[in-house]
Length: 124
Image (cartoon, rainbow, N blue to C red; front, side, top):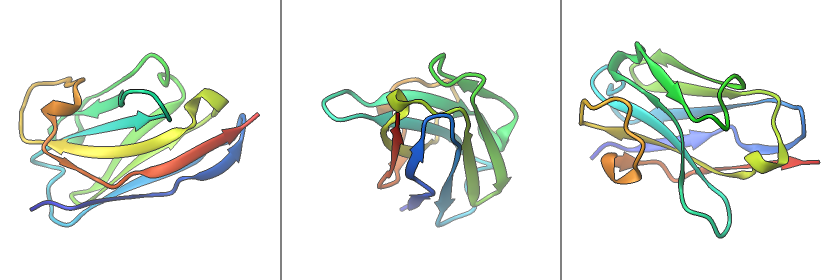
């Protein structure tokens, strides 16, 4: 069973930056696609980004495009850098991996393993 652990969330002022980490219990990021999602209170889980196997391509949601960057550090660690944060970015952020090769994959049910999430709060 693959385990994922997110970290790096916190409270930041609007316009600030955070770098979220996703650590895997196995060397999987070269063989699995990686997704980032977020969920605000009372809302459905929302797609943020999807990185293809090996990190060759990443597609971002329009809501974060130009402000966020996914980087694959190695086979067990991936980062999501978020800049120019806005109050509407406030949510719990999750990383997830999928065995499927379809890219991009926008739906949560396309992913096989999930982390526990990390809270990002952006104050105005």
